[in-house]
Amino acid sequence: MDVSVVIVNYNVRYFLEQCILSVKAASKKITTEIIVVDNNSNDESCKILLEKYPEVILLKNKENVGFSKANNQGVKAATGDYVLILNPDTIIAEDTLDKIFAYAKIKQNLGVLGVKLIDGAGKFAPESKRGIPTPNASFNKLFGISSKRTGKYYATYLDENESGIIKVASGAFMFIKRTVFNEVKGFNEDYFMYGEDIDLSMKLLNKGYQNYYYADTQIIHFKGESTPKDIKYLNYFHRAMRIFYKKHFKLNFVYDFFMRIGIEFWYLFKYFKFRKNKTSSKPVFNLLYLGNDELIVKFLNKKHLLIKESLIDDYSKIRELIKNNRIDTIIFDNSTLSNKKIIAHFEVLKNEKTAFKIHPRTTNFIIGSTSPNIRGQVEIIE
Image (tube, rainbow, N blue to C red):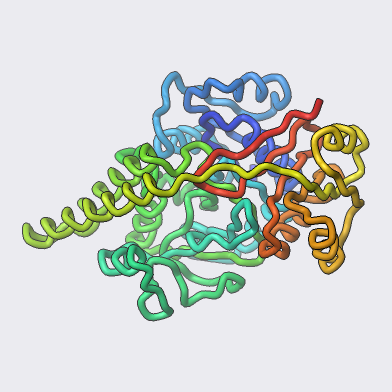
C-alpha cells in the first residue's frame, strides 16, 4: 500500500463525502486506502459511508476524543508506506497524490510535507507554510506586523508558489512516512484540537528531519466546518496555546509569568473581536452554473435567475458574464469539471466578489463555504 489517507470526521457529512470523492479521483495511479475516524457524529456520516462507500475503513468512536487522538487511531490502523492526514472539509486535485508521492520519495530526510491551501473563496491560506510561533513571532502576528524580516509566524521568505523548507505544516494536510510518524509517537494527545500540527512539526525538527512546503499542487480547505470560529473554538485554541508554550518555551518564573499574561491578553482580544463580528451568509439571487446537468438546471431555475454555460476556460469571458449579469454565485459541476480545474477557477476568480459552490459528482447536493466563521451551505437537489 502506497498511501493511507486518514480523515477525522465530526458532523460534516456532506463535506466528508465531497472529500472522499476527491481522494478516490486522485487514487488512480497509486494504491490508496481511506480511513475515516468518526468522533461520534450525529449527522448520519457513518450511515452514508457504510451505504455508499463500503471500501472506506470506518472507525467509530463513542465520544468526541479530539483531533489528535482520532488521527493517532487512524494511523494505527493504516498500512500505507506514507500517511496523509487530511481534513474532511478539503478537496484535492486529481494529480495531488501522484505529485506529493513522487516529491516525498526524493527527499531523503523528509519530516512532514504540506501543500498550497486556498480557502472556499479562492484566497491563499498563509497557514500553508509557517514558522515556529515563538513569543516574538506570535506578538507580531497578533498586531499585524509582518514582513520578510518580522513575519516568522508565516514562512514569508517563501512565495506562495515556491516550494521549499519550512518549520511547520498545516494540520489540514500533512503527508508523512508512517514509520517517521510512529518514531515521534504521532500527535500529542494533550491537544484536543489546534496546536497539534505545530507540536508534531517541532518534534520532527528536533529529531533532525526537515519539513517541506510543496507549491506545485493546491487544494481547497473550506476551514471551520467541524468547529466554526466562535467562543468554543477560541477556548480550544486558548488551551492549545497554553499547552504549547508550557511544553516548548518554559524558561523561568518571570518569563513564564509574562507568557501567561500574553496568552490571556490574546484570549481577551480575540474574545471581544468574536463578540463584535457577527457573520451571516448572504442571499443568492443570480447564479452562473458551469455544467451540463439538466436536472440541476431545472432545480436552480425554480429559485434563482440562472445563467447556464458549459465548461469555460476563458476567464475573461467568465468575468464578463459575472459583470453583465450581476452574478453573485458560481456553481461548478464536478460531473463536467475536474477538481483540479475547479480549484484553478476558485483561485483565478477570487477577486470577483462572487461566492463559489460545487456539485460533487454522483451526489444530490450542492455545497460551498465562503467564510471560516460560519458553517457551509448545503442545498439538496430535488
